[in-house]
Length: 212
View 1 (tube, rainbow, N blue to C red):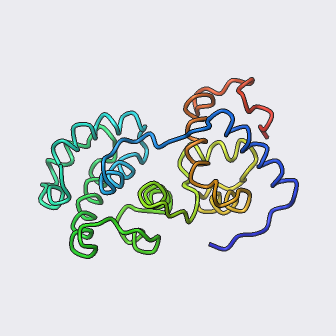
View 2: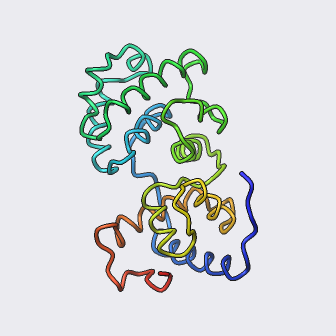
């Protein structure tokens, strides 16, 4: 992903924002609950257009019923759709997850692929999902996951002016050092959840001085 250099003012402002986020959230972590890399992939796919809280409620039962990758390979689509229905868009999510299970078993020896090129071949996996899985499962950081929180707050704070997630990702990648990319996503999610949601963002929220 080719990057365009940012000017010194933009970078300085981004670093100030990053320091403020670090102060608020010194130890950010993944909110989705999982016990292995495949479950992480499933949870992230389910999180599209759904809150992490609801996903965790659904996967608490889902991961008890489907304990291994083979359970997903053998799963019946209709039954699986019922199991994940509360997360929304359940038909498409079920199709993507169950198809991915077969691909992972057949082509990757039952292991979630650990490169951007390979993981993007799985149905329903775009860069956001890929960045989250690669970073949290393997420590492979190739970009910044742009979910709804990151997209909204990046525009609010003047870090990006684009609507397209991949273009926003490029803007963020040139503003922040690579070592910060993974936790930057977690911190922005925490900030959106705790202080500045889409529905409610008070004028005096802690980082209001960065509002554009």
